[in-house]
Image (tube, rainbow, N blue to C red):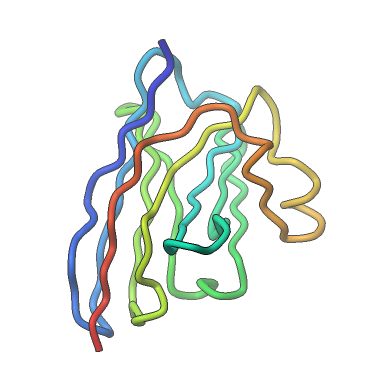
Length: 132
């Protein structure tokens, strides 16, 4: 059974850093699009970063570009999200998600738009809280 488990969330002050990890079990990240989304209660889920594990290409939303870095660790079957210069508006539940075989969808690569429906496997989420 394919599963994703996130870890690394917590509470930090503005300007601080956190590193989230997403460990896969029951499948490998090989040649798939893996993304991080975040969601604030009452709002839609927002995609913030994606990586195509077949080639390492990455994409970021404008809101996190330059501050967040998504990376893959093939040996550990983990995709991480390094978050630096955190802001209070980064406070959210963070989810990782994996798509089917192949590159990230054109909605991400061409338009910078993440659709949650394009991802098949989701983790349970990890909370990130940034205080001012």
